[in-house]
Image (cartoon, rainbow, N blue to C red; front, side, top):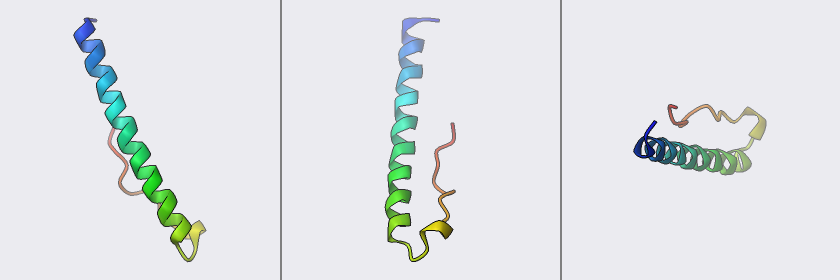
Length: 49
């Protein structure tokens, strides 16, 4: 493994983490605002890993 490859992998993981956190926050707020939070569908918008 080269240093460049390790950096590229680390950068890709950071991007995936940011996208997943953003989607989780979106769903957290939407579920909190929903009339029935337990029925809220949180399965959409997740990044493909």
